[in-house]
Length: 190
Image: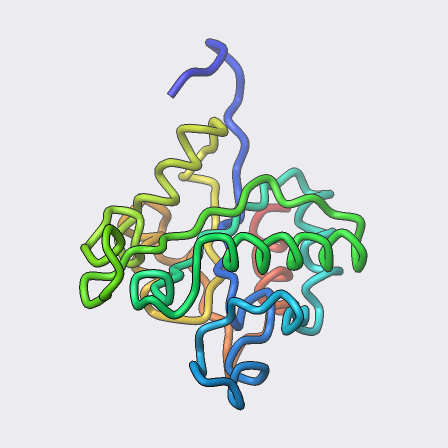
């Protein structure tokens, strides 16, 4: 990691993609592969995402998406389809909140896949911390002041494995929605 000596590193909020920022289970339920979102036409921001990301950006956080996309390894979609879906998500966020994500990383690998060379385990596949650590090095991010917002245990585990404190790894779902997670981040950081 390179940075200017004495420069303060910026904190980030790491974000899962599916069912955290954009709907997945709901929009893929009637597709041949429920749970695998790789059609840009199906991208739909979840409630509160635009406003929440705008508030986090104004508070000085880098916004970094880290997403497992094992459908590539399973031969269900291509890298280009995942990238097109991510581009549509970025456009939707830009349209809803005039916010630019700092980065979007995804891991196409899965050890039970069928499509070489992606059919192996990889350091980027959550719960491994590879995507988070790579982003921290690339953007000079302070993991001790960073957060994770995700919808699955593997998101929380990846954050903790990267050195983010467990209380800064927030699980959205039944008890906490995205807006509530953003309020928690801003309340603890303000």
